Length: 287
Image 1 (spheres, rainbow, N blue to C red):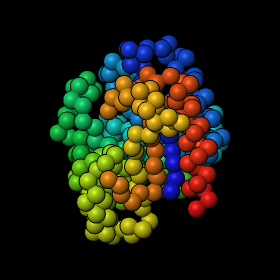
Image 2: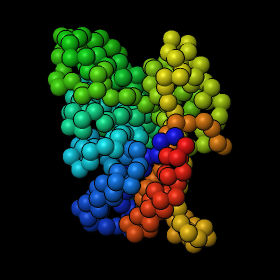
Image 3: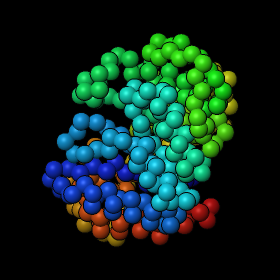
């Protein structure tokens, strides 16, 4: 099992900090997480919020690419319907090259109506746009001229450079908690990144969809993202973190969790990560 940290750079009004300070100390904390043995860092995206939720995942990943050297860099998730597929393929290839092949991309269809209204994307198209994005990106990452005539985008004799560092492009994950998301991930041949505590039967739906599409389920991974906060005193820990939690047990390959719930102090989140690194990571490494 592999463990990752999850950051969204949120800055809620109740605990508002200067953004420059929040960003700087978050980047520093991620650099520390790499040194402590965490396998990956995952960033998520939202738009038009009142809490500064990270709207620009690729610039943040690029910043991390030059501040780190071994930790995997991933999105959990990028909102696929808002991406132009050529720009998406180029941004991903750039970050993958910059990081030496450490990029992974989690995608999801999105759900907040305010985002679809603000960005001018019909919410009814979110599934088809996500699937077309995956199709075009894979063509673009080949480095060869390609044409595409889809429902939302049409291209003729396009060549995208640079190509990614990783042959074939960064690993792709599909997020979501519905059977539709599970089927989409399997049908597209992507890893599956469901929301925490998704019904166990959806994992079976994912594996069945992989098989039906001609993929070997053993070659694909799943992830889970529960809320974790580590402390010496459980009762005190709950008091520290409960106001910041704004948002079954199954088989999975990667576990990632919010390293710093929105508004939680840097000191409290750092102590939680240190305890996890000191007492949890070694026990799994030993296995």
